[in-house]
Amino acid sequence: MRSASIIGAGPNGLSAAIVLASAGFKVDVYEAESQPGGAARTMPLTLPGFLHDFGSAAHPLAIGSPFFATLPLDQYGLEWIHSPSVLAHPLDNRTAVLLRHDPELTARNLAEDGPRWRSIFEPFATQWPALAQEILGPLLHRPSHPFLLARFGFKGMQPAAGFARSRFNNPRSRALFAGIAAHSGLSLAAPFSAAPGLVLAIAAHAVGWPIPRGGAQSITNALIGHLKSLGGEVHTSRRITSLAELPDGLTLCDVAPSQLVRIAGDRLSAEYIQSVSNFRLGVGAFKIDYALSQPIPWLALDCMTAATVHIGGSFEETVASENEVAQGRISDKPFLFLIQPSLFDSTRAPSGQHTAWVYCHVPNGSTFDMTSRIEDQIERFAPGFRDCVLARHVSTPADLQAADANLIGGDKNGGAMNFRQLLFRPGPDFYATSNPNIYLCSASTPPGGAVHGMCGYHAAALALRNFKP
Image (cartoon, rainbow, N blue to C red; front, side):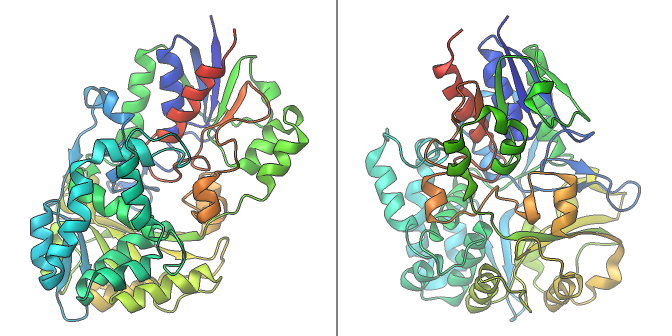
């Protein structure tokens, strides 16, 4: 029987395994940690009864993934929860601008910019399945929907800050879009930094930004359940340090390029090793998980309607914060990404109590303690927050990497999302290496970070096309 080994049991590794198992391969997945999932894990990080997502928490690209849509994940317990608002972005005037699933409801928040917002995002949202097929993979390809991709590309190639200034007049609209675009980890003045903001805003109107009941682990468990139904196996606490430890056959690696070279360097050409040696890491993350005695006491009550809250104040502050980090500096007022899942999922905390996690961008590998600056920002929009904290679990970039070797220096995107690495990730061969039996399938390949499985899907599909028994 044809066999394949997968190194790494994150969503991309599991997706690759499912593709190969569906094609009749005997598939074994090897995971270094005791708990599979990579950044899609749910863990008891603070107090008994409180469940925290280690990495990803809200999942627009999981529910919107073309590959996941082909899988019966609901049969393995995956259930999506949509909060009434997709996203809340509080401002200093005690109000919050809301991103809603319905473009019309979003437009009502944005005054004179409402019609413009709808005209930009709604046409793409109505064509999400086609757009997702075009953008959730290598951007350099023969498109099935060339005009749709060209329209998206024309907007996405712009700097996010310039895009917001040129399209919107209302400070609320500008702040909302800048916060969404900040997920990229790029300077918002950088070319192509608008593209991630466009993708996430379009996805909000097309499929939402839901949370999985029970946490991100539910996605991993559903993928594993389906893989096992196809005969695949997952081996945890199996850190692979050399391909010599694995049987002969196809090998797909859900690891960073530098890890691939360490594991398989003796089987790769010097030219390939050189081609990935200049792969650039992205900014790091500094993350805190909280066990709370009550919901966060937001001044803007609209924040209670959203699982995801962006904290950074005005458009200008958001741009300044992200630009500082991109230039290798620590921000005095960091832009924050906060999730409050227990407001909508009672499985995350004991009755009457709550969980939240928050992170900000920092220079890759930073050792600076951001705890007080993060909590000062939360207190700015939710006075009394610190009084609600029962326990906190702080994760520095080094801590994140220790818990998931793919998060090098705290980089959650598998590498910088700059222009070169949007087109060639990690190099011009994408998933292929110099060895026809070895492929890379991590977030360091197209389309990059987030839980969608598309890196694994594309790598496995290429491996099948190239496979010669």
